[in-house]
Image (tube, rainbow, N blue to C red; front, side, top):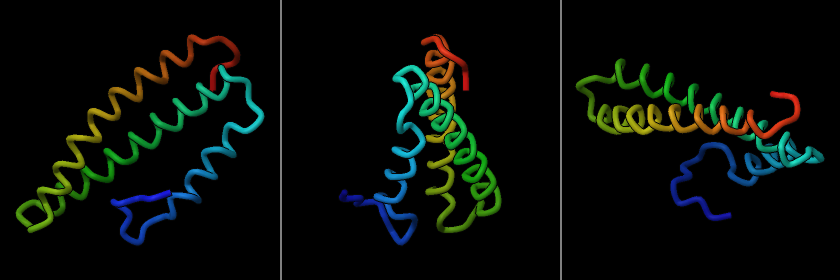
Length: 95
């Protein structure tokens, strides 16, 4: 899998394998709930990290990148929350 934004962080294939393992063997409704929950939790963590780093780097050369990431992550949190809520309506036990 090609990952043009990859700069020495986690291997995309390893992340893909971990996500696949999360839903392996689950019914579609349960898989949707698990993936939506994962998206919501990771979006929240990304936003928290970006917010903290943007605050810490205010005035530094890399501040715009962190501030931009914070803004994008805020939208991601909102969308992921909606996805989590909608996945919860699919039936089966909520995750």
